[in-house]
Image (cartoon, rainbow, N blue to C red; front, side, top):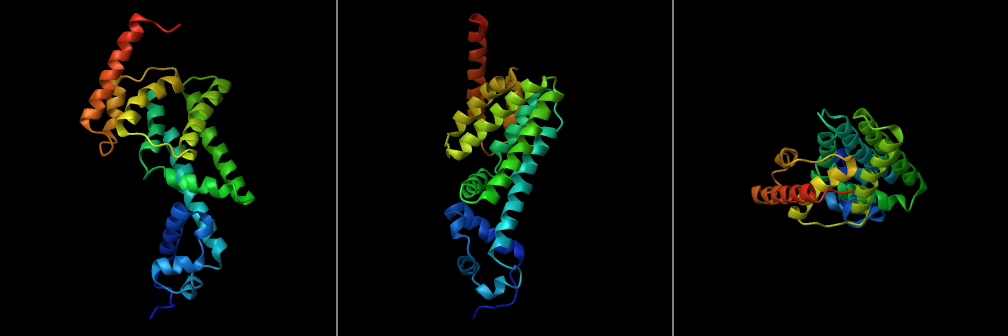
Length: 229
């Protein structure tokens, strides 16, 4: 017999709501499916929440705390150069525990259905862009250039997420240095790449890193022989 007392805490309900949002979209986040997922009755839900809207609000709060806060904090993290600062931001795209891309995709899909959610996404976008622009300004970029570079970084990544782009690990690590070069106008050295990859050893093997560094060395030699105009 199911227990109607609140023996399952709020976090468990929100975790279950998160799972349903990710796998099936916001329309699936309803009280009965949540209770079934948790193996309890719908009555126990009302010991902890007023209604479904409160759970949905808690999901949005979690999204803002995790993804927006993570990105802003990464832009403010200590770095000795704009290249290192950009790689700090890239940590968000390579570490799902830091920035949850599946959560981002689900919330953005949800925002297409509800104006209030769309407004929260718009506000989050503004915060994130402002943080990226401020990062560029700290490293000597003029405000309008900093704004353009910030938008290039951010809108490209949101495009990756919105399109559910899938890349192999070796493709991703090989593109990091080139993206840094494009985004900052400064070269990402093999040493920069090695420090970055060392933070993501679960994602990149030594062989993949070595191949990427070899490719970077080859490209550097090519550029030296044929300078870009």
